Image (tube, rainbow over all chains, first blue to last red; front, side):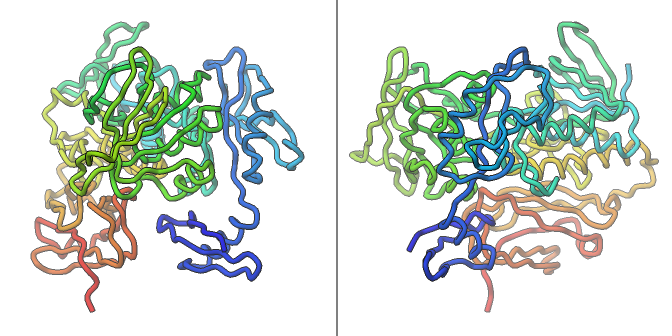
Amino acid sequence: MEKVICTVCPKGCHMKVEIEEKKVEGNSCKRGEIYGLAEVVTPIRVITSTIDIKGGQFKKIPVKTLEAVEKGLNFKIIEEMKKIKVKSPIKCGTVVIENILGTGVDVVVTRDM
Amino acid sequence: MTYDLIVIGGGPAGLASGLSAFEEGVNKVLIIERDVEVGGILNQCIHNGFGLHTFKEELTGPEYAQKYIDMIKETDIEIKLNTMVMKIDDEKNVHILNSEDGYKVIKGRSIILAMGCRERTRGAISIPGSRPAGVLTAGTAQKYVNMLGEKVGNKALILGSGDIGLIMARRLSLEGTEVLGVVELMEHSNGLTRNIVQCLDDYDIPLYLSHTVTNIIGDNRLEKVIISKVDENKKPIEGTEKEFDVDTLLLSVGLIPENDLINDMDIDFDNRTKGVVVNESMETSVEGIFSCGNALHVHDLVDFVSTEAKEAGRSVAKYLGVDKKEVGKKEIILKNGVGLTYTVPQKINVDKVEKIVGVMFRVNKIYENVKIVIESNGKKIKEYNRDHMLPAEMEKIILTKDMLEQCNEEIEIKVTDMEV
């Protein structure tokens, strides 16, 4: 039995999730049940950070994983992001790391600079 | 030089209102921004979660800003960067100052006040103790980390569990600053549930509810922060002190609309919102001057700012195009009943309403299974059920023209218990 606070809507139901029986308690709607199960089986998050940029208006340019990745990879992904440096000008959406840590997800810059 | 519309502030409210006015046919639009670029605070909010309402996708702050910047590039809207507005006079002359033009006066046929808001500082909440380096607002830390690439400290404590504080707890953790806790005066967090889960729980950062900072210790750099539990009157309880060895204290203790510019103007101000009073058209008590975004009242989500700003832009187009004599003056005042802390707008000119008006408001505490009741002249006009409301989440109801026509000069909006 794992405790999960639902983040689907502002209500924030406190739910209990039974993984083996795929049972969710304490949710008020179907969306909560889906979220609760997913959050226990494989919680995923979009990871955002910044990377170095040369010749830009600022020293850093923001980046993100294009899709949500397993949340336990967050620190490793930040380490990978720290290794790269880009040059200005660069357009929002440009891929700067392909298939980060074999997740199949690319990392893109999130603004023009 | 004369513009049809001068927008003061190039953040999300300024960009969306200027764009909306232009799209509605206002030709000569100028946006004035004091920073080196437009986009406002979005540029440093590198996390995702923006845009679900406006663009139906989850964007980061810079991406959200970029969308508006790209749309504005396709228009003839002018932008003046690095420019400070000094004053707005009675003739709608905007006095500006920058290093290229020097001091210059430009005329606006209409003006939108979109200056945004500022963070409350240590001075605003009077924390006792010494005054070492290392005590800074969460937003300042966000700029240091996300834009300037500076680490703010090695060990941090955060006071205030508003969204910026929570977001920074995660951000500092990822950047190698150990976050020992988030301290909140109230019994509940003011942040979105999503941020409690994804910023604190994910990183095992404890949340100390009903606690506050009672001492700050350090000579040159912060060395220690003392927190204490508070009683029901928010007074620290002796003997409950906890000590944290930290070199950094971030403050996320609320935002205040930034309206210094209107201090010398004869314009109605609302002490509840700390913004100007507006009507259904986002128009202030001065004809042709409008306001929107966090300068008007602090919003939870940028999406709501964009919606409101779009409305302000549309109103400007209407104002500039319409023969004002034709519009009647039946004005309804919105009164805060039990449970409400404010409404925006504060008044409604019924004749200017096309079909509907959205009314935004906040409640004073957590409510479960209640009704929002709209009354006028002692008569119930409409009620809405709500199973959950809290001060941190802005509420919105829609008033239709039909409903407004049943009202006299005052509408009361209040929260009541569910009746059987």
